[in-house]
Amino acid sequence: MPAASRLNTDPALDNLEDRRILLREAVLDAGALAMGYFRDGAKSWDKAADDPVTEADLAVDALLRERFLEANGDDGWLSEESEREPHAPDHPNIWVVDPIDGTRAFIDGKPHFTICAGLVVDGEAVLAAVFNPAKDEFFEAQLGKGATCNGKPIQVSDHAELEGCRMISYRAMFDDKHWRTPWPPIDISMVNSIAYRIALVARGDYDACINLRPQNDWDILAAELVLREAGGRCTNRDGEPYRFHGKGGKNQNVIVANPTLQTKLIDKLTEFEPKFPKANQAKK
Image (cartoon, rainbow, N blue to C red):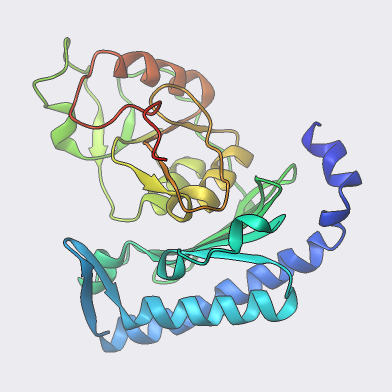
């Protein structure tokens, strides 16, 4: 069913405006909470090798969970800091949260982290917020209603060629020996948070983003809806769209741009055979 007709007929979306307001207010409050830790310094430790977490991650996680589930007790919940909750996939409505995306930047005192939250209804993202409180940038989207940053509509750039592309990605990838032909001249930058990278493409600050490492639902769900509602396209390297099923599985990689440029990036990636897994080798 097309998005517009589904939004008008699906009973699960009757109170979507209330949920949108809830999402905005909760994420803004979570940003204020995170900034207290950011200014004063937060305790951190490793959950696993090269996988840091801070007390701020856990505090933001607890705030968002309380706010979302207190208002809608029948909803499911999936977060990076509580991803093993077994009931989440059984709910038609699931809040998908990354309390702080870009934790390493947060620890290092860099303003390149975001708080990400989105609502999935029957496997489809319908609401999203990506907030960088250090820069006071609040990206927001609703399915079929467009995307905004701080209340102003945003749109992806119309740059359609690889040459001259403003790319946000890891520079080393473009110098890798696996390319059959070199890239044309492009401008490469990087920030830590994958959600922030996608949001910056959605706003037109950059033309494209490539990340070939696996990402979880909570890493990209909210930013993907912002990007899509801003006129962009985000798929894996095989050009396949994501399925956000609420189980915390990994989408294999992230290729982001306007539709014309994104198609050319997918074609270019056929020249690259790195060690990363192909998207069709999905994690079970």
